[in-house]
Length: 368
Image (cartoon, rainbow, N blue to C red):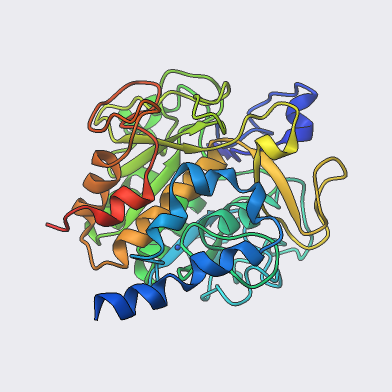
């Protein structure tokens, strides 16, 4: 079974090429500690693209940094790999792994180029996702991450925009066994693939998510970009938190699947408009020199998709784990403190799930 990458560049979206293979996002004493913890928020303004990061403002990330910056937490980006030499990544990385046609044993270090040493179209995706979650912040380069002091574990399970359930399952298990507290899955299968896991015809990823959940690891997964009513698998699976996408006006993004799954474990986060204006999409890191002619700035680019929404939630989850919370509390707080555009909390809707993730409210919530 092939799992397609859930991301979309703004320039491709504008041309209206809406295949699932191209669009996979539809498939990081009180007074003293607060002063120290607030440093990333104060310094974030020296990242050149920070003013373009409307998503950080939508999720109230900066207000949360005075309480938690994600220090000590590892976010595994199970994706297309990460550019290990990117200036917004080099200080943030822990050892990673590659599972692309490798079997259950890693055959690489999570670099975006993969086992053959060559980049493929779409392999920029993982670097973009990693930057949203936990790019180096306040370093005078590029962008700021949601969890400024969290670390990134790069795990490559996709090549040229697609991969197998078996490889993704191997990546999930590796992350759970090597210290990750959050696993980001900005990927998903075609609508209807939920039937494969419900009937047991495909169980590798389902069992891997159950394994990670049992070890206290949060699995955050993209809803999908097909404007479908259900979260794609693996976001559909029990143990995963499904993430739908919003635009900068807090309206559900037109491409985003709804936050509907059997256990109602779903929220929303900034994914971008996916239409015309680059600044209406989500700016983040891409492998060196791969920024698009339309939007790119060499090492940075603007993408849209539920792939981009997912690492916002992963970053907030890292902020919560850094407060020594248990998994059940992390999931509960992410959902109970999420808000609708009208400011309501604790209200589920198919469009937003439990609402747009709110970092400031989440880190202030009780830990019990």
